[in-house]
Image (tube, rainbow, N blue to C red; front, side, top):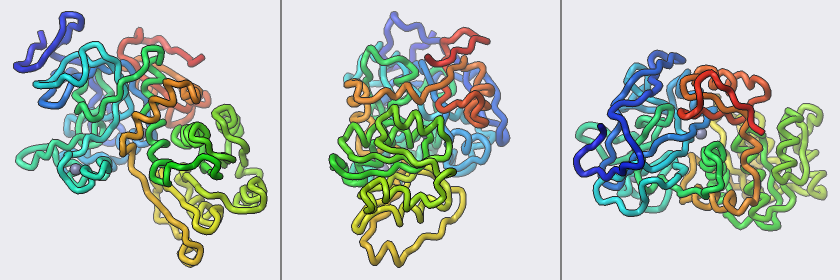
Length: 388
Ligand SMILES: [Zn+2]
Ligand SMILES: [Zn+2]
């Protein structure tokens, strides 16, 4: 039985020595294997993973590699377990941990910065200067589970206490797995200045982060919140999450003009770009008013030309954000706890952990209009649950 020295466990949770974990072999090749249950060190806990959501970035990692970086290189054939959007129950405490209790349900942030570099000291731990340095004689204690260290497509994982966010008892496991998604949207709005009450915001792209950006912007008091997207079913969810207006960019070829018309003929104060479409960056730059700000929250797949002269002559600011820094996940969880928006609207499917390849296919090919697909170790095998 699991009883590492210095680690506090409870008879309430029987922890095995080994667990089921998905392991990445060659690109796109995942195998379910047995792995030792990891051991928490100082300032770490062991989390029993109750639900893990699949993110578009997981697909990049599994099929292409980056932004994952294992031992300084590609993540393939390194016994690496991907998965970064998960929640669970604290089942063991590393030496000296009294911040969390065994039995507590938590959502987890992805990035545990080293805590000692310039950016970590500023709260920008997702931009840690010691990113990926967590092995051998250059171990800086940095972890980004599912990117530089083992992630959540397994039964147990070790998390730094700084990455834990306690969640409300009423929150379902599936909703808990979406706290970090909402946290990323919160971070985008934090970096734009945070004070968006009464300000006009466009969100481009209605993927999970875009839809959460609509919900969070609205909860922060933005007015109007306009969502641009090409799929009507996603625009409908955007309206349910609080968008004041939507633009279907397939039916409306001049999206800049359409947005300005919706905002009384003027540009908007902020754009959160979540689509990764090449054209979207320049559209965003032309959608904001003079002095406006654009936050880029999507990983683009190619280099994107932008209208620099327009940016300079209109005092426009462009930001990139990575992940969910400055404790944004804590703020997002509070909004969800207060039921300011219903994040579960973006959860569409749940599969057993053992069916991860099916879950990935649903997420990748958007089978059955899938948005957020979740896997759960506790779910009975061969038992698929559609979200209510
Ligand atoms: Zn993600
Ligand atoms: Zn750091």
